[in-house]
Length: 186
Image 1 (spheres, rainbow, N blue to C red):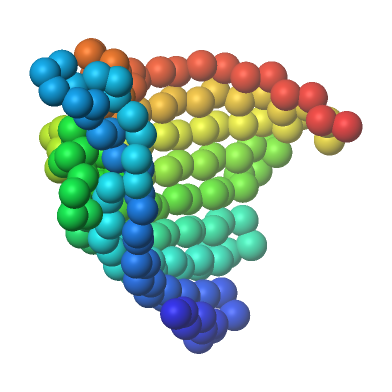
Image 2 (image 1 turned 180 degrees about the vertical axis):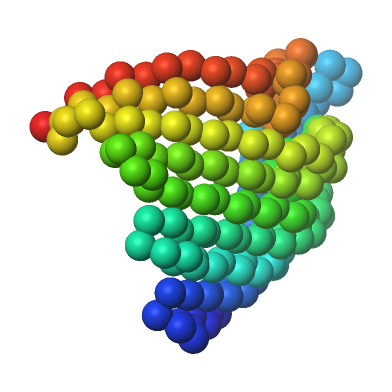
């Protein structure tokens, strides 16, 4: 269910709400005792999710545009009767409850562009991953219609942060990075 409005020619807003009912989600079912093998994939998880998304775009001037968004997500997943899911219905439910994004796109004189994105991502519940804030910046120059030279900095607020914990034993961290890029478009 959604609603979109443009109260001013430079501003647009949208709000969406959703509800999902799940049945037969993936589960990891153990085999017979004593070793629980072979492990099989089943459909032993059920539940629901609901949330809302808010988005806004504001054209500050001919050369500057701001975009923002907020997402709220709540999941309630549980085992179906008879399921022995080894993950206890947690694999499909490790999502951040709150996320916030603010993006700025600015065209500067001299064929320069300065773009920035700031994000807040809430903690993940199981396995626990701390919440984080990240900032990415990009400065680009277009000396010709086809050539773009850019300098990009990603994750500028931290040396590194964990975004999720994969099935592998060691968490993977997203590190701060700065790089240059040359792009040719025709």
